Length: 551
Image (cartoon, rainbow, N blue to C red; front, side, top):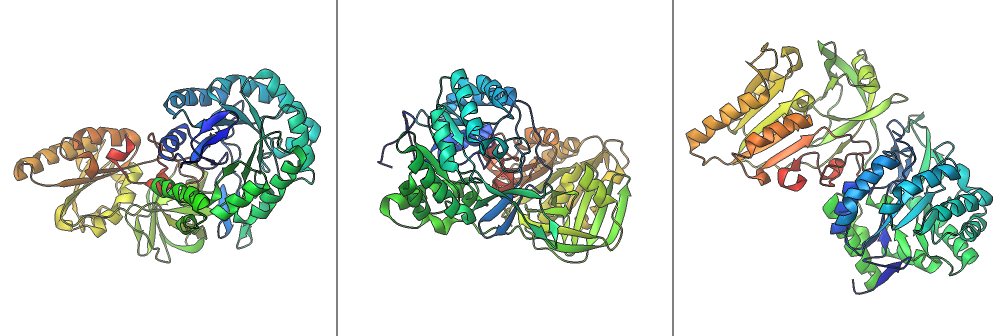
């Protein structure tokens, strides 16, 4: 990009940002994007408050029309002190021409000032979230009052030396007046808009979001965003720059925001479903489209499916007090490496590996309120599923495949075993006792199976690492190192770390794939909850990540 861009006195690499709360919600994701996507010159964090907030229970997002979403994440954040530690780690690693906009929230001016003092050392500017429409006592509840907005902006300006950027709500008839009050209070720039609403969306007459209501975003709010930015621009003139966001998905949308008065352009919901490589290509194409007046980036938008299918429970095989295999009445389309979400209205939604797809079978282990409810279901009960999500893992036919699973990780690997050559596949599974090993007879039809239990009630007594290392030595000795081994690991992080130390003696990192049990909330890559240590988003970049890619 030959064009020079600047924001609040700093030269930046590109005119785009990703609005607060979407994708760049984790420090590692921010670092990855900063170093890989130069078109994103302004990096905006998730809104950070005084204390840690877990946010709302899933479902936290749903799609009500193509490219249109309702979300109620609930201001999830680690708290100011922990966020400061994370930002301190990545700030020195960011390119000099990236602008770090740290978003903050609070219930009053004192809260904002408290957070400001903690995070200022790591911020190029502070965004004040005065606009979240679904967090009681925060955001929009404050941001609809011009006097309160002015008071908070003034208080923060007195406390810091970095620029201050209030983010305004579209849910008002006086956004121009509010913007003017913010500038009178000392605002250095304005960001608009946050989500519209709150909105309400149902399936079978049942509210999908556990919070019931949520902020609306995506293509459906484009006209509202443009209207608000134009009103802000008319009210404050050229006094401050404007970050315009809401509904941008192509160059034409971005150009219209420019004409309405925005100099920095926020692209958020349009990124739904894109993995890291796809997002990189999209922003490069979007910038080129704006320069050349073409429209190639729009072709890179993903068609995502968040619709639910209803399944009836036809069999429950109880394995232990805390686990069971549930069999449903229909098949589900899924490829090795993918997963689905199970939803029980007003209880919650969680991601699960599919044990078997013909018909749908789920392995459920008690972990929280949703799994407890699933384990308590009786024959005939109905459960909603959406998906599949995640990347299909392409399986080579001429390689010797080694499957390694522990705990619930066993459930994710049966689909691999079905697709692979049984004569060239070996599976290693470990559990604490015989009761927690499951579907073994079916697995034995697809692979040579090796088992271990902590108490010795099935297979070898000990850990899965013990049986794995012994067998790998045998394979290596017999083939004299000529066998090309490919590993697929799934289980808790400590187990994964332990088996990696063994596997790296026998295979290159390109031939080792791991799925670690990260928290996955949305499945479409926008919430960032499932960020890996390398900044990959597990739900779109994985869940099986190549060992070389996670370092």
